[in-house]
Image 1 (cartoon, rainbow, N blue to C red):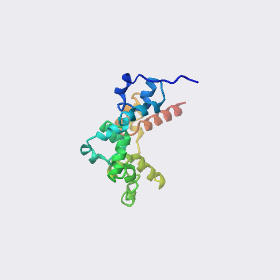
Image 2 (tube, rainbow, N blue to C red; image 1 turned 90 degrees about the vertical axis):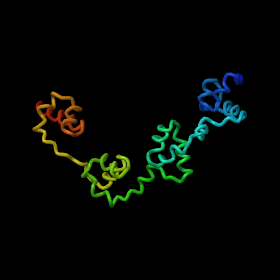
Image 3 (spheres, one colour; image 1 turned 120 degrees about the horizontal axis):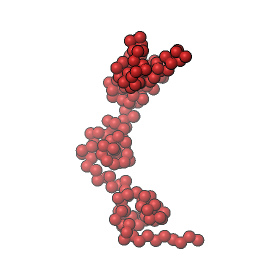
Image 4 (cartoon, rainbow, N blue to C red; image 1 turned 180 degrees about the vertical axis):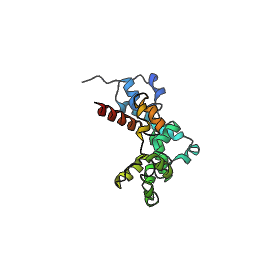
Length: 185
């Protein structure tokens, strides 16, 4: 039978509620429940509960305007308190709001504008626009590139520099570089 670890709480009590029970238990070398039992005995709330002290009047207006994790980063807390507060106020999540996009208003623009540009116009994520466009089998916006104007720079500029000059993606330039190499072989 293993010896029972009895922590010297005079060294550890000051950390209770300021870090997770698991992290403190790892430092001590004991089980998580040992730390939780001591913390509860002293009436100290768990580490995640300390964020209940957030002055929500400064942050309530952000709830539901972006992903909970992004708002949490801005506040300086974990995702949990943001999610709980949003739900308590009955505010739908940012991604849930995107389920209610009136696509009949936007479908005609799919493929005529870049996914990020259309997402910005709608007020949703690029991924949501991408999924909708794919669902409707609509090709992404394509700007035809007149490579005859740019081929002389393909081997002299970096892909990033040339993409910026042409106003296209870096992968389009890299594709053209491969194409020209294969053609010359």
